[in-house]
Image (cartoon, rainbow over all chains, first blue to last red):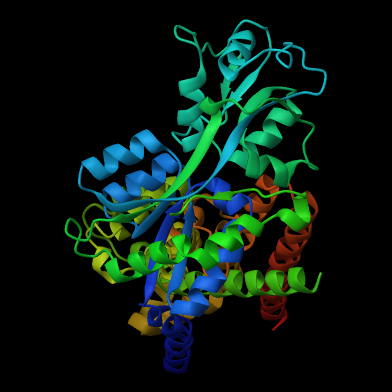
Length: 268
Length: 218
């Protein structure tokens, strides 16, 4: 019995020792689009190598990411929900909000376009047609940046009835899969759509409207408000992602695989 | 392919590390608790037994939510900085597996004929002697309890996703990796991971079963 306990303690110690060592880490709360598109898989290793920080990337919707910022549960945010971001900074929870990059949203639907939105001009008109068209629309429904954008595009007084308006409550990738299976319409950021193009039966039916621009910002969580925030690490990441060299990496990302950039650098 | 292989082996190693650690802790706590409740009488025993039985069916996402709230920086245990680490996952899985093992241990010990316990006591078995005797008598069922506990945590996804954050190379285990790959549309990779998870579960249970059946023969 004693020997067994000794072994047990040894095993526990061996397992836990390396876990306790990682103190120089930062928590990055970000959107599913930066994770699902694979961009962070490229950027994070460069950052970790350059600075020695360990990045804990939590890929959630922008809403959840900002909620984490508001509670001081994250150190730095990379998000795309401008109105909510401004409120976060105005409330003193975030500092040093800087533009990182943008892409745009596209309205997707089945190839045969049963609602007939392809010929319409502008995103609002297309959304209006879907609301009256007897087709399904899959919403993220998770307070993400995409969800916020989608809600802002519906024409005033549109009733989002659950007869045709379905909320997936999941990330962009999962929502695309659902829309494809249900032959429904959905709004997606271009980056995630391009990286899923081969896996879903959805085509772009409306694009290019300025209402569909999708800007990403980096925000550091205010260390004056939360003492546990790793301010140095957050600043290091924030400086890193807007640096000229990394902006170039962002511009190049995806060109080889998808034949076009997924994100366009915005840092000044 | 080379990369995939590396990634899979990393995920398998982490899965074994997290679930293995959680199982070890749960076995110690669960079996002790089961024995204690089965052999002692104390006020509120029925309530505790009910609580353990309820715990056998704890919804993993509720456990995940609670552990997350406790471990958050702003939470009561935030100063440990355990959230989004394998430790947080071990805690969640231990909370899930301990009641399963405790409940099955309790049922096992309570089904030992009372006469046998009286007899052992009459022959002078006390404390640890009695426990040891019961362990030897009920080895088969106790190992089944361990297997049930293992099955409960190796297959769990909701809680570890919430408290671990599914961070690549850090807290991404088989189940959360499968969810992510399926969401990303990499169905083939998800299926490969699924096959590996089944194989892993099978081999661990095979090991335990071999011990169990060997015990039966001797």
